[in-house]
Image (tube, rainbow, N blue to C red):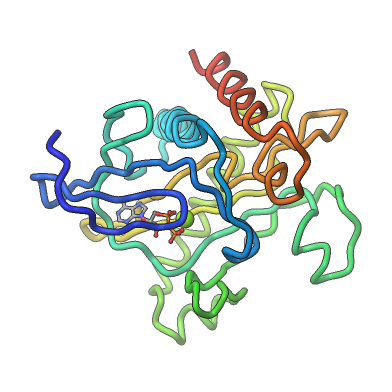
Length: 237
Ligand code: ADP
Ligand code: MG
């Protein structure tokens, strides 16, 4: 696969054009940011880990009937994806209370919800990704009612599949963020699913196994990303 011009460079990934206008190369970087870009750093080996974990999880979801933009692995830190038109709405699913949710609503950490909470955020760095509800999404014209319904429904399906998978490797899935895109009249899961975009707690100990180690300077950041790759890989193969 010929790597073409750089289409977009974000905080964690680079997208390159390919000779096929319908496909892009998604390259995962070791760069890490947190707190709306205020904290910057590097997590050695993160690009490889996030690429491999995303591939494993996209494959798992595909087996369970959830399609995504993932086409094939190209290298340790690159995958070939379908080029989609990213919806400017990030879908967050929360299974256990933590982070900004606890701050916003004044609730304690670590409460397991009877049913997952789906949150919508406007994907807009300048506005700092504000929380929105369905009415905001529809009125701002960010998605149609049918698209929004599909995104929310798929997010809940992904939640159930991932929760069961992580359960089986001794990890509590706490929350995660998904991005979707338009592709040939459909809504397709895109972007990545990795320790950058999910929160994982080891069962019992509640040891954090995700980007919170970087956000909160908990140490063993690189080691924890490698551990997640091993735990997920061992189960998947
Ligand atoms: P950001 O800093 O904006 O979050 P990232 O570093 O995550 O960016 O880079 C990936 C960018 O590419 C994101 O903006 C994401 O929405 C977009 N993207 C992910 N998958 C696709 C795809 N299949 N087609 C087009 N854009 C995509
Ligand atoms: Mg991103």
